[in-house]
Length: 247
Image (cartoon, rainbow, N blue to C red; front, side, top):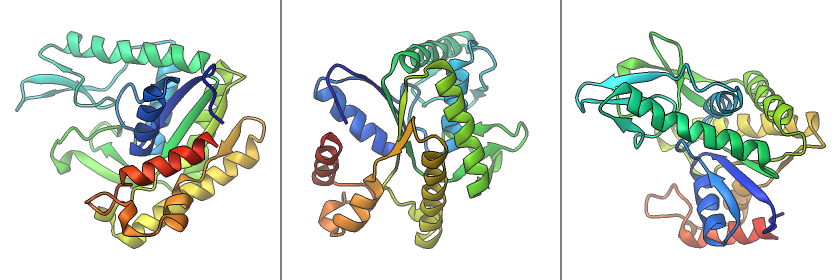
């Protein structure tokens, strides 16, 4: 699946980060989460559609009074500055870079982590990162399978309209969300898997699936394959899944 003469983009949850960092270390031409980790499909869609929309305006910015700095709800906490214009310029630069990378990529890896997203109570905007702000600012939104299919279809249609030759590989993060409870975490993964399966059937020429979640859950079931927190894959597990991806 991986070739040194191809260009790759990786977006999504922490598993994309693991694989992206490995790709870069191995000398592949890859861009990985330029705006930070993206956990849910709505955040991924917003990022993709804004990057490819031809405009860098309209980003949801906010002022963190406690820290005395401006940030963006659609970017990692590292995108921050004392003035709104400066913070906005940092985020816009990364969106432009992502636009160029997506338009010229041969393959995009999209790793979905959860079907739970967080919306700002007042604006209704889905945030990519809660920025360690008070819980009262957000509403938790659980995306149904039908809603996931709509969001993923919008994402794919936007991508293919700008890069018809793009191949898209979905995968589901092996990370389990303990804060939701194990049962709810499993329901979340099941919803993502059902939605992805529908995308593979809907876009057979452009979309496929890599079973990182299944490798972790069904083949690497021993806890020695987990990090100390019992949730993230251990370095050994990442090595095994990486080798399977290369195969």
